[in-house]
Image (tube, rainbow, N blue to C red):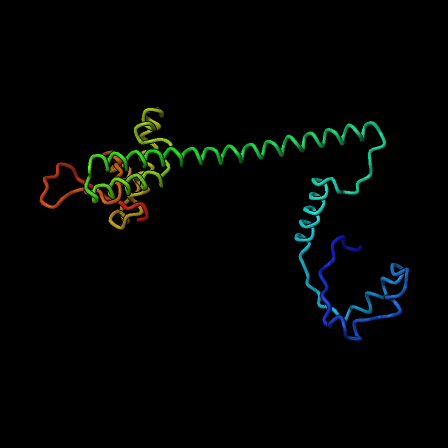
Length: 233
């Protein structure tokens, strides 16, 4: 069975060489009748680049899709009422699906731009406030780094909002699971049992610290025990 898309064949000789020129077949007006002769003639004079059947099918589908979108596909016109109705419905459904996909992508882009614009406006107001108050440059850098840290997390819901939104029992289960998995990755608790870790996390409260923030200073009186975990460790 002949393939709809054949492999690519490149000539191994230049255009001016005598081996790449067959005068009898080239001057024939009915070259379609000599396809077998042409194939035999060029079989040893070309380099074949093979493609997988999946690649050929994908290229063929893209080719026909491009022809259909640009209304250049030489498809037969409908002759019956059923064919006309099917063609109209198919076109309308395709346009609706295309419009829905484009609209969804546009909404995602608009949402991302809106979030970025809001954060940029906050950063600008913070910079203006710190310049107006003549804040030291060290504190300005710490504030900006913290804002960049919060922006990188992209949290839509904070810990307190999640606690208020979920039922107490479900929140405790989710919180315990999230915390004991963090403890299990630590070398300090690597050899501990899962039941022990689940009991320990019942007494833990998660807190986030920004970059450059002082958690505990040397010589400072501390009333709580802290377990510090980096987000990557």
